Length: 187
Image (cartoon, rainbow, N blue to C red; front, side, top):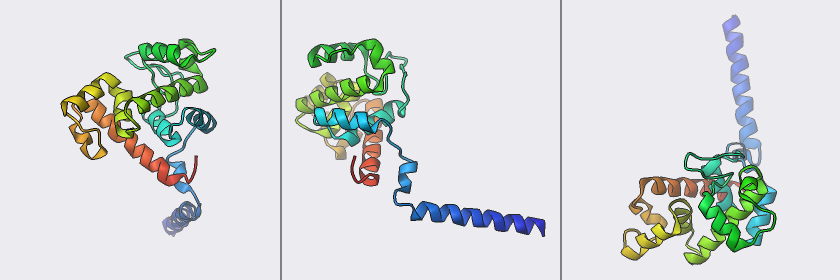
């Protein structure tokens, strides 16, 4: 008799949880949260970059955890390589941003990373897939792949990206970009 009562309670809890999930207007956002929305919104507006792309890159790079430094030395939320960050800081002329701040301060890292995405977007004429690949592998490599015909820069041909790490990276960023775009009506 006791075990039957436990099963009923568990069944009621399961039904209740399922009802809450499906009756909640945006229940999928529980599984795909976006942190630092204000910073992403502000900097993506300034540099004319899709905020869902910025969020997807942050999700893949660090899962929104600050203070990260990769084994290769990439810094902060958007995992900017020190050489790339120095170059971007010089070109962007951002006041009060340093390499030290990039690692610990989300807003500074998001600003520089978004500026860099904007720069890549101009270089690759708005080709979002090529921009994602260049963010991971570097713009020189991606340009070479495009010039030599190794990859045509389309989402349909992502499987042709010569470097496995970059191919997987692009697939993951596209996945999260699609999820965020579908789940959130607006940023």
